[in-house]
Image (cartoon, rainbow, N blue to C red; front, side, top):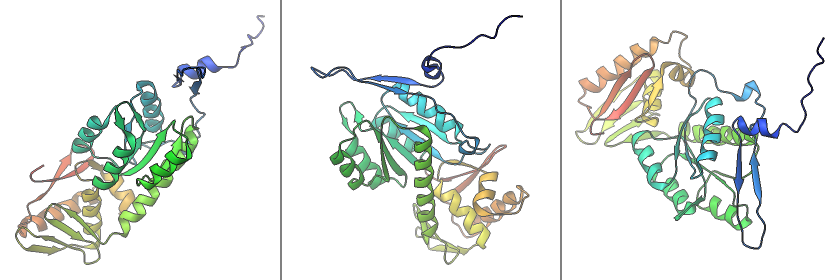
Length: 279
């Protein structure tokens, strides 16, 4: 009977091939430091379910690190896009939008701090700086620029995911606390459960459920929102097709009152997407 084979070694090579990476920084008269990123051991509770919980843009000019983050974030249930620079980041925002941006500060000729300020000033997305720059002043500058969190490389993936969840919870709470949501000339007043359009003076009333569904679609402007997500977010009845009835009523009310700027498109087999008429 053959003897069981005993594996020797640290297992480092195997972990590296399973979504790991090695980062090498060459310095003058300072040696060559290596940073090793290993795939973590995942707890099932950290992984996402079948629905996408949030959309994340990773701004990272290192393709290997971009792949590492994409794999872990996707496994955790997030929709992920990667941008290598500020131009790609802006293009992704125009076409897809995002709930959260993971931003590296070392992007070649671009200043990551300037990009952080731009994101805070011009988008509703949360911003987390994920960088190898661990100097105290960099941390202070990043948080003063408006970043929601600052984490340095190397990091444990479990900690990164926990920080992401915390940031998204804070942003979701702040979004829910807002009384009004505006897109173009259309404003949804959540406290009054009403929609108004300054372009023609039209206004209408919605039910509480209709207001919440429309609020979710407006906050996710341009992105597909699944029926299951609407149900989870708005605590509707177990029948997902109930959402279709509410969407039909919202469309009818908007059309009848001449508020035509908001267009709700079906996404076959999934849910709905809201766009402005001139998008």
